[in-house]
Length: 107
Image (cartoon, rainbow, N blue to C red):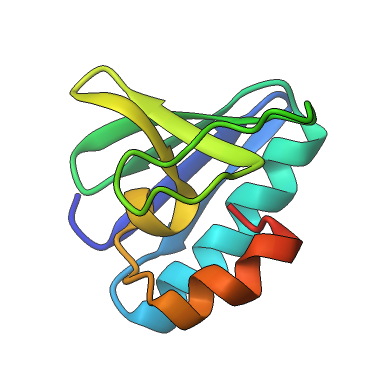
């Protein structure tokens, strides 16, 4: 369903609105938080299913869209490559955000 996100993780799940940029930013924070505490998190958003994992290794994967190195990334059977949370959730990634997030590794 468009504009609704379902986040499923071991022991539970949550349904969140994902219509506005603000709601999607809140979703990024929820997904990143859960991914760091679980092995795999499933995110269903805009008709696509994503598997989200947190990588604590030194060599972090590179997002297939914005090319940032990320600690929390997602893959989907419908799309090739690995994507950061901002790109897979559909938030624009500006050059300024890339510089700010480089140290924080939000997603």
